[in-house]
Amino acid sequence: MGGSVIRRRARWLGIGAGLAVIAAAIGVGGVALSERDAPARDAARTVAAQADSAKGFSPAEQQVVGLLPPGYSAAACARATDPFPAAVASLDCSQGADSGTPTYARFTLYDDLDALTGDFQTTASGMLVSPCPADNTFPLPGTWSYGSDPNQVGGKVVCGSIADRANIAWTRDAQLLLATVNGGPDLNSLYRWWQSYGILTQH
Image (cartoon, rainbow, N blue to C red; front, side):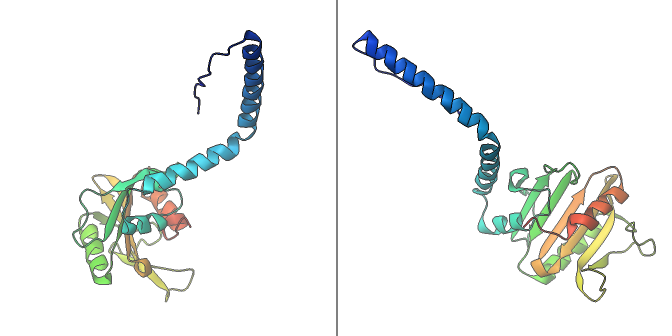
């Protein structure tokens, strides 16, 4: 960050010239150090910017930030203006730094599994539901599992569209989180993203 240095006018020209030489030398050294340390400085600024962007969030909203999938950050999110009444916290997030993330996403936190399930069903009822790409048999909301064990149910998932945009909604029941994403070229692409990142957190 640049800045101007105000110098007192030297009483003797000789002293003033000497000070100018010293100041110039320090300035050149500062530029060299600045260029050499630029990557570390830029990384620190990124971390600081994300921390600053989360300062205005409530503790519950900061909890949601900690549950965001990879590719999303606090800097890309804002408090939802029309959350479900039962929500503890709700954030609307735009496409993250990773260009593969969906165009729009909402992440909503609850303190009760029944409320979470109810709002998931409400979300599904507002969609034009279609089979998820991995399951062409049942277009109705289903469940997803951790790993290959179908008995380790992690939550519910539904695929479809809203206003002709591909849409996926799912829950992470253990975290009491409801997530909705939409955008992308088609449902297949959106579902591939969900399979890779939807059930993960960034931490």
